[in-house]
Image (tube, rainbow, N blue to C red; front, side, top):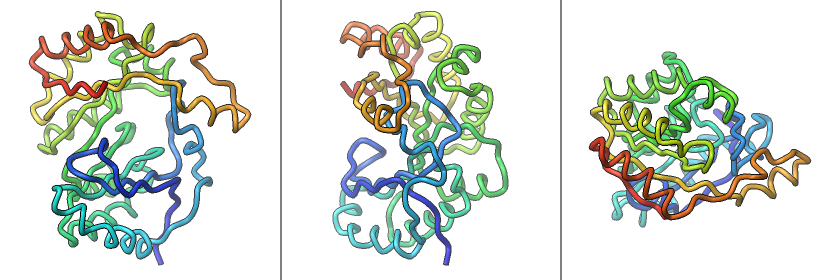
Length: 246
């Protein structure tokens, strides 16, 4: 019986894709974001094991209020692409229930046959764009942004509907030069339906402390409304539809 490891389930999500979402947080992540608010999802051996049948049974239980709202299932994490083979089968079952599938991912991957098959079963991708500059991206999240930008271009080539998520972190992702570069890149992608601005917050700090880990952005504050508006204006000026979730 096919199984994988998940961190948690949210049965009534409204922030991770269209409509009402059944959100599954998968375990394991290759990134090491200094601002991560799900620090306890990094370890691929953490969380709990769940079988495909168990997960589909849970989705079926909530189908009655997911379907009328145009909703469905969102796979997030952690990094759901680490579970591509499992997810392909899961998403196929979700489609059989008449629900939509969404993938909330860092995009840090290469296109393997398993990833390609998963994308064929994905209705919408929520893609994080954490920094436009490769060196600063690496300093902030521990990996290069080059595979992520390549992944974004592949989504455009395959015409997969995409929402870009840009995290606004004062002193890290708010410099005008870098925001302009990010906006230029997003504007070049024909499949992007909108860009969501996600304000930095400290709500995950306690998870770092619980794991005995030092929080990496101790001197960073949440962005002001003015800083959020300034970033939003840059994207808007480049013709990118911006969703203000603040």
